[in-house]
Each structure stands twice: as structure tokens, then as C-alpha cells.
Length: 171
Image (cartoon, rainbow, N blue to C red; front, side, top):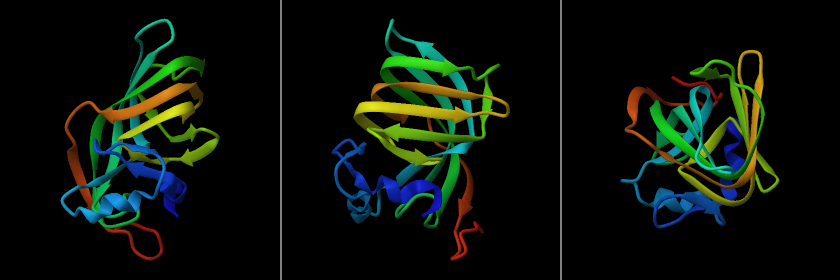
């Protein structure tokens, strides 16, 4: 599947619409009034990395977000920019993003040993070891730690409608 979405099938929505380890995300598709969302690291921008305490950090990203009543990034839906906060505990940071804001070219989120490349379910709450590798033009930033949450920190700003064809390209 596109962007590793099939790997996210082990996530399920909680009453707050977070994705956590468990069952298929298709459960959320039963309510057509709820949009399923996914962050695409490509086309996103790293805004800030803030240290909250000696061991906790908040990463702020203006993320390109796919929204759909079905599978984001695969099914017909809409795309836009939304500021998101990534909170992580027991943080270790390797590398450097350079001058901020910085355009993200690719990203991989590791959750308990499973890697999810470029497209990840959002919002998300995961307890366990987590890592986030963000690739920029000429450098890579690796943030690892425990207990990651990714949630909206602003309104969705609509950019486009997308409708993926059978060959995987968007119309």
C-alpha cells in the first residue's frame, strides 16, 4: 500500500480518536461523519524542537495531512496543512535539522520495532519505544524515546482535493 499505510493496520481508534496499538483502523470508517487523517512527512515542515524538561521534548511540525472518510492517502479525500505537536518522553536527539523552519523530504516513525514510512495515522498515542527519523535536504534528524503522542495544534488549512486512481497517482 502507499506510504506504509498497511503497516498501520494494527492501530485502532480510542474514544478520543487517537490511534493506539490494537485492531484495524477500519473501525473508524463506520462513522462517515468522522474524517480519518494521516500525516505525510514529505511536504511537511519542521518548525521547532522544544525541550519541556530534562527528558521530555515537543516537536512542532506544519504537517501535510491527508483526510478521508476511508483510508487517508489511498482513498478520495482532501489534503492540507495542519500544525501538529509531537510529544515524547525520555528523548535522545541525534543529528541536526539545520536552520528552522526546515522542509522535510522524508520521514520514518518507529513504534515498538515496527517502521511506518512517510504516511502515519494521526492523531496517535503510543506507549513504548518510539523513534522518528526526519530527512532534510542534506541531513537527518533522529529523535528516539518513549511514549509518543501526535496531536493537532491548530486548524486544518485546506489545499486540495485528491482522488487516487488505480495506478497510485493523484488526480
